[in-house]
Image (cartoon, rainbow, N blue to C red; front, side):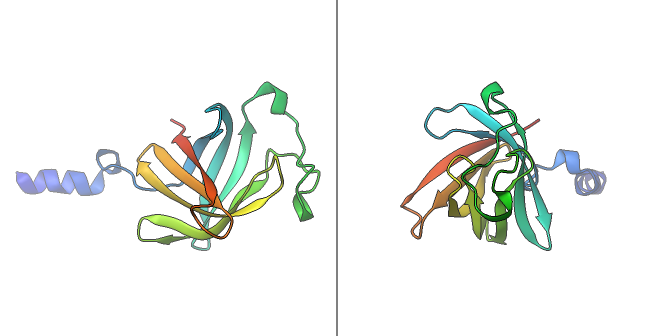
Length: 140
C-alpha cells in the first residue's frame, strides 16, 4: 500500500511543490509596493529570460521605452525582454541582466525563490550590495 502512495507522489506533479521560476510573475515597485506589470519567465537554450507581457497601471498603458538603447529604443514596453541570460547555479539564477524600462538602464541580476509564489529579484551594478531588490509574486 505504501508503494502505491509513493507512486502517486512521483507521477502527480500537483502533489509536489513547484520549484520552477517559469511562469507569470507580478512585479512590484520596491519603493511604493505598487503592482506594476506581469512578466513571463521562460527558459530558452538553458538560460532564463523574462518578458513584460502586461502593464498593470492605467497610466503606463501604451508607454514606449524612450530611454532604452538599441533595438528596444521607442518600442512598446509591453513585449520587451527585460531579464536575459540567467543561469541556474545551486538555488539561484544568476550571471545575467535585468533592464529597467523606466530608466533604460541595464543591471547585473540574480533571482531566487523565497517560496513557490515569491521571487526575490536583485539588480545591481558590479557589487550585489550596491543594488535594489524587488519581490515578485507568482500569478495564480
